[in-house]
Length: 336
Ligand code: EAX
Image (cartoon, rainbow, N blue to C red; front, top):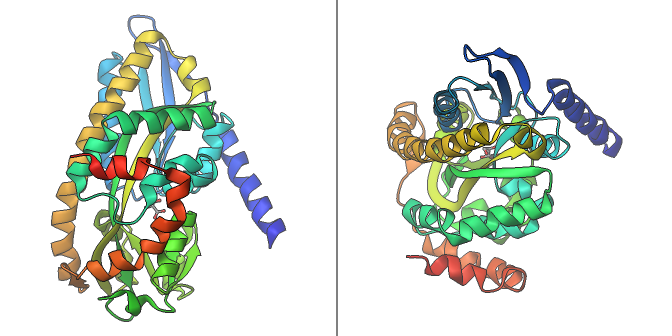
């Protein structure tokens, strides 16, 4: 099995290499400047919030660079799962990636403080954290641990909630023995073990098939992901646990970034920040719209579960990770 995994990982990195990093020149603009096309990958559907944010990012990048820069967007995990793409960025075989933070744990353990359950009160609290000093410090930490990566902006995946195939989840005990797919992250694993579930770490690219084949019973993701990845076709119950806030980080390979002119770097950085604000609004809009549509498509939705028993159940998770993250946990909680 180990041999198969290493062959598959090698194949993913080679695929990324074939796509090439460092930007690809695409002739010249009318003014004679070299045009550069940048490849950017993500795992979600081409109708998702990530995709909408990237289409806005592309529009802004072209506008701010006077046509010198453009993006080629690769959705649906076509360049691999998030860990593969982070690896590709790190080895310079991919220009840019938008990834949630959970799979980054293996590269930058410090960032996983944000993956603690029930850490963020609401989206406003999360945005204040990531747009402030803490968010900047976390970006610096990523760049220290991944020296061949430049971070551009915090975007958003959203608050993650649980879906299950056969029965509604109303209290932690309902998760006892349930095989639930989680992202590759130890805090996520400890959280669902604390609920009594059997967490199965898995790349997003394998998730729909695993649900369809019954290899796993349940999964957890934000509402826009559940809708645009059609999980309602293989999951019948949604409970708005909103147990993790899932931020996303937009990153560019340093090799690519350093190959741009200062004006192009400014255009890319400004566009990333502006598109991130737009993408966050898309998440909020999609959450409202898609909850209604998921119910219309036949999902049973528990919109107001009693969260306190879930919060009480994860106290041992905080006890375990407090020594690793120290007062940063309280700093995040105290952001008003
Ligand atoms: O970042 O793996 C997941 O469940 C994530 O929500 C997805 O890849 C988007």
